[in-house]
Image (cartoon, rainbow over all chains, first blue to last red; front, side):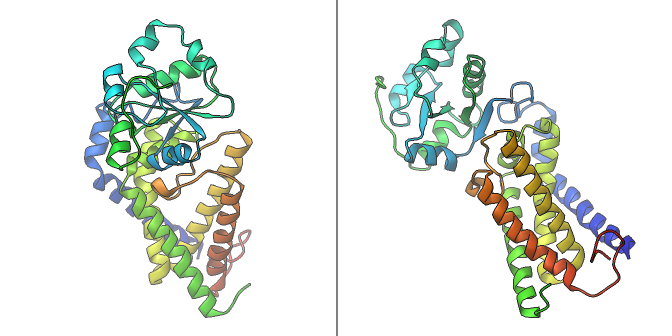
Length: 162
Length: 146
């Protein structure tokens, strides 16, 4: 009866693949066009970088276990950001030594980087820079500011994050 | 081995229900699940996406079949293999020192840690009890598999 098991298992697996592909045709097309690069990073940039969800970002915020770094511009940051977040625009990071930022992060705290939302690549790019500066595990909150504010979570305004 | 049919029925409902829930919640957010898989740093992006598209359906269908009673034994075995695979994956992840989200229930997931192994082991026990409960010929080497 082993044959029966493999037939049934094959049927379930085959049905799953067909339904999975058929149900997400637009997503597959987007991936084949290379349109998913901000979200699905390559394995070359992956090690040392953890992508996290809104729930995880919220947990780190509520437990005061994370240092949030906002990779958006100073203008965007001033209009609203996650409370106590540090602003470190990616444009500035490219031209500066970012060792100062790394040095200013308290030991034992998780580093969470975000930018405007799922389609912005700067959060991930900044995470790669910080990882290359020696931070062991850098978290990227992919939903970013858009998802945070849409969920009605705390926010603050202003430029001075200190 | 548990033979009480009410207990086994409860096991089917619990395991089937959990996998239907886990599958449906991930079908709704395939990209989020793909990122969770990628965080384990084992597979390339294309493979992560393929698994993220197919595995949730596999979980939901197996769970539904287990509850309804179609391919009951096969579904119970498939979910057992899946749970055993999850346990091995979490152990490897912990051994590598990675601090990642398990990806089990979409945004409701939590860390891949020792407690998760325990929970998966309990579910594995229930799934195996269902798989082994039905009478039938056994496959040499795998007790209970027909």
